[in-house]
Length: 316
Image (cartoon, rainbow, N blue to C red; front, side):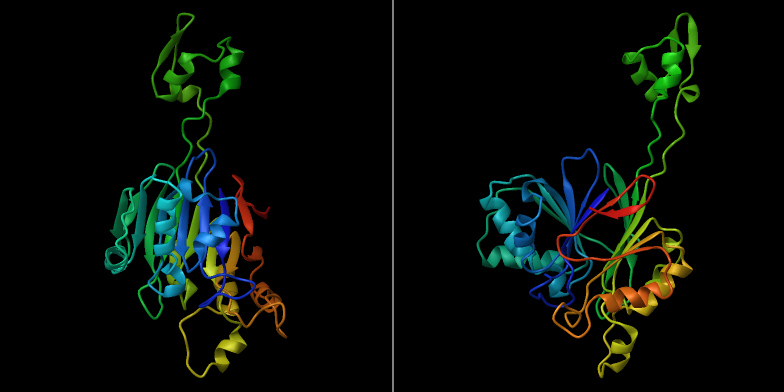
């Protein structure tokens, strides 16, 4: 499982960071999935190893512009690139009206099938390699997280055990994988005797804007990877005259430690934390680390991370 961060800034683009977008890929797959699509996401895709032609599905966490204003340009360019693969977009109520208005006013004829699905909290969607549950967050507009559960691998054949009894790879392997009893050298072989222990699918939460990480409750417990916004340090948030509903580094660290989150990537960083300011992203990292003892990263644009089968995250 591989994640490519295409935009990691909160609210507006900066010279260092574009606004929210994240690509997700699975092993041995010919497509990828996009989570949020802030302005200029198509430019970020062109600068990455991802291809708009292989983009299968887009998920939008909420209807703030820095999370979906990049959709019209991306949809239009997909046509100009003659990338006519069907595309599905999942988003909160209102995303359908927005896209239909844009396409109507611009007289855009996409030339490919576009499906727009509006979801609600607790909706469950099943894809070929994973299931996705929509979880409600707390923000100034309806905002959601996506709980992704990779399919378990249950049909892995014990090839070593079969070779030990003299059976070389053949169509009989496939019959066992399908759950069928076979006959080999006059003896019945039952599938349950020649299958490896199932490999549990990885569990990931990709969250939109949210003031209270613990609202995710039991879904956080022992999660293999949490990708969550972290817009402010606690001190900077406390000094705001007008409070905005975003997560602080202190809250994110404490919640992740309490819920035994295995790997944590913080994103959606406020523009005030940059390389030319008195405080860079290290203040976010340090504040999270005061309470969180798991594997921690602060995402930058074009960072690529791999979550291994052993549920260890590494930056590539």
